[in-house]
Image (cartoon, rainbow, N blue to C red; front, side, top):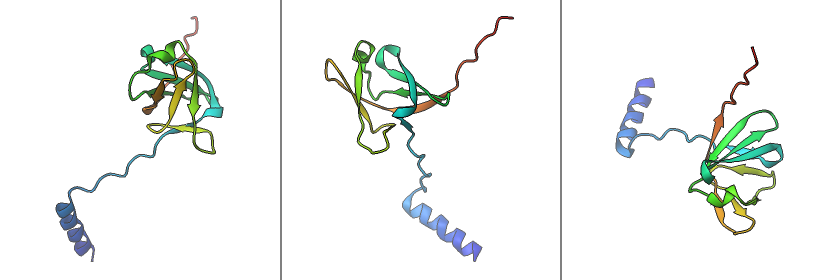
Length: 116
């Protein structure tokens, strides 16, 4: 039985192309847990420091240089106040420019040096 199943799987994968790997779930962060944020690389990315100590960098789909000088509001369309990679946007307060979030990357915080 095992050989029959394996053979059928191999034939199906040849007919339909390779079986795609399961897509990773999108990363979402809760806006209520953001302690601070820092615009980086002239508006190309933003670093979020979270209440639990984790840090997440989001690289925008395209640079958002106005973010360096302006405040923003989130365009959050879900009941749990989370923002998700590749789906959320922020609107700059003065210019009205829309900046689309890209991929989140979990960052390792730099270790603090102690005088020695």
